Length: 447
Image: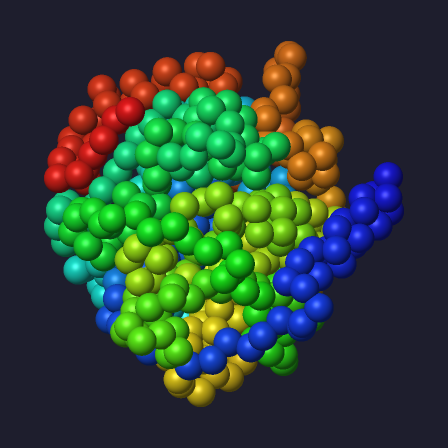
């Protein structure tokens, strides 16, 4: 069965590799952009990866937007799918001692700063953060998604710099689409996680990050202007299992092209796809329907869409490495994927590409993936999520006895899906109103 899946995905990858026509992917080059206004965003695992990149180079980015995600450095980073799913998602109905405690993230941050593997997070004090969380998210509880606030609260000075929208939604990228996608409250995998939610999440986010919540007239994006670029030049001399695809996408608005009579300096934005919605699964479908292309044209934003790749058996739905497959320091400047994206940024800004950093591939006991001798093959329960490319939580009967995280329990229980929905809402808005008000008084929307 796994061999069949591999062959099918390989064929899809080859076919999608020809998506741009007979010409080979182009190379990224120097672009004239506002260097002090570089922003990031991502959906699901891409949202978590965007946080990893920002913490690694916190002086470089002016803001970040995350959709249907969990928080930076969640989990013990063993590189094992089951460990991450048990500690950072609701797939296992984890006990109160198994769900990861976000307060422990700060211990990791302190360690990374001491080892000079990330920049000083105090660089974030004047940066902006946009958060979108769905109460029906099939993968993350509201608490798991909104715990990003407890991570960032120590570093961002003003609540005016944080915008949080909590919506009655599943695992989606919220859009104002009416012709493509599924209703916001429905599971959206068949539409590559594009949700019809009555508003454009990326537009709201970028308007907040860059334009002080002002709007602009919509200009239709040209899907034919979405181009492929060669990612292999950014992965040379990195560990062989960096899990970056060979091809990425980029979009340059008409007025940001040197050939345009109205040529101008533009903004630069990086967007990271989620699991099962990258090129190997969706070609550019997720990007085309995200709302980012028309936003790029109306706001003069150059969009870069790096692409992660699948690997078997540990990452067969093409997630970003948010759980330590590449080693102990995956969430720092040493992480191979972070190094690859940083090189893209260097190239666009006209800087020499960063040399490879050590410690990427042997951090967990000297072996790639994990150092405890445990096979990195998802169990039957995680395979429902990974191997079958499904995020829907599988109901369980009886009491499961599972091997949990002995050292990093949070005292928070995810519970069942229905209980979790009400419990999460109750905890966030009733038990700890100060928590919510502290971060979200300035900008919060409940829909």
